[in-house]
Image (cartoon, rainbow, N blue to C red):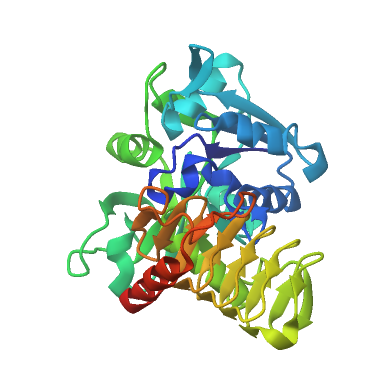
Length: 387
């Protein structure tokens, strides 16, 4: 069976991570989110998968290649062009990407599934497709019920008693919301859906195709299902996803590594004197990471591989990406460190290099600059006071 993963977006709401990592490759404890989607699709018999790519397309293609090692077949539809020797992405929108593939050579010849490449899900796809076919739908949105007090964070789907979609509300206020069923970005289509998408132009599934289906009175339904759905479309979402995995709240993602102490998991060859550090789980520490004596790590926290945490540094409820070096006395609470950026849980980022703090947070592969130790200590203490 056939499926499509939408992977062409720039991931603007997940910056600065997506400056160098496309959203489908964002790691959930070292495993890209799109890899979980491939496993789910394969489990339910979807083994022919088309992926539209644009932003950092070569990164996605280099990792997943033809899909063989994941037990599926993958092909890519690149949206963009080469300018002065560089690939420049020009995404066609989620629906425009579908139309481009079908116009190139008809691929979608039976019921197919479309998934956004930035969510963790454990949906029973087989049951979802069965419901879609029973309703005789040309298009089905898989929805999920949420508490009414949080509907303002989502796109709301309004249906009649039979599940036929009547309208949409984009992030309505609690008082204005006509439903608590939200759009999860999981769609089931019949090939005829292509006829509703204009050729050779940008066109969005949610913002343009779906309203058109309602307007035309097409057999367009919502199937509300109870399943685990963790969106990582924004930095706060990603931060909560990592916390959820470490706290065992997200059941379909296992913590990697070996549990060396209760709630403390490590990759290979982590250098640490356990009796000289303060580490409180749940914590994951990646392979070849060095934790100096006197460091403190309080969970839920993740330290990526090849990091160096100096003596006196504190990591509390934070996510540290690979090859990060945290200098002596650095105290990170509710933070995400990615390359040269330190991001708080709301998504606000500090460029530590531009702020001349790159001797406190830097790449572990760099030589540590020998600045005046008194000055370093004074600035570190000042940073601690601001936390």
